[in-house]
Length: 81
Image (tube, rainbow, N blue to C red; front, side, top):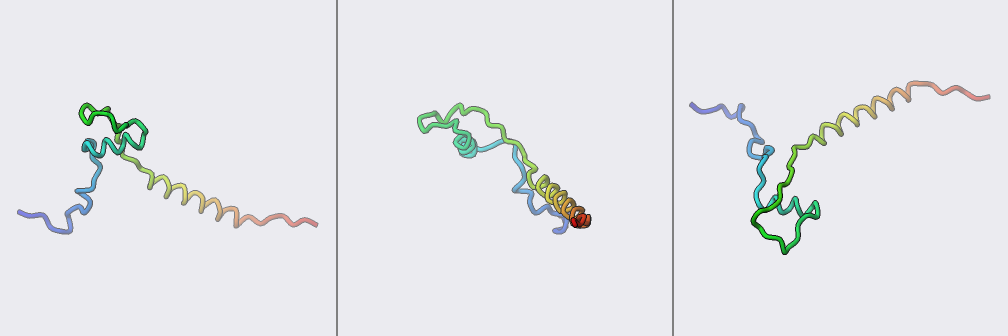
């Protein structure tokens, strides 16, 4: 029995993976300045690969900023004589 197309997950192949390929590990090491071209391709050091939730935090911060600006816009400023 097959799965209905509406139930399939579109991003199933692009999900977070815990294990990196050798080329991906080398790229990560280069970004961290832990890789030299003279180093061996075998026995690479471990690389922490964590799933980030940066998008969610930015959305929450933007919502907080918008709410704060709305509140300050509603408060009338006292007039000076």
